[in-house]
Amino acid sequence: MDFDLPEGWSCAVELELAVEGVYAGRAELRHELTQCCVLVVTQQPTREAALQCMKFQAARFVEEWSSRLTQPS
Image 1: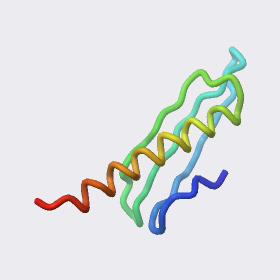
Image 2 (image 1 turned 120 degrees about the vertical axis):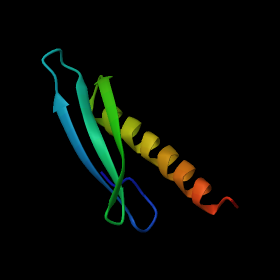
Image 3 (image 1 turned 180 degrees about the horizontal axis):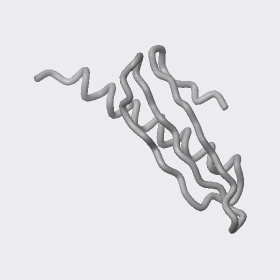
Image 4 (image 1 turned 135 degrees about the vertical axis):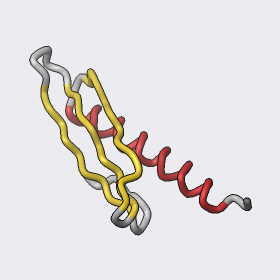
């Protein structure tokens, strides 16, 4: 799935279908070569729901990260 992240950002996703029939996984966010965040998603009813949740969380994280970099010190 394309997370539509800004240039320089990448995301590696791991998803698993649990025995209970729900999806869980993690998404590792990197800015260039630096690992910045690992997002965890649990108990999503479908694969698509899990990916959408990860996409939303990734966008929020990148937005917050970028705003902190551009704030004057």
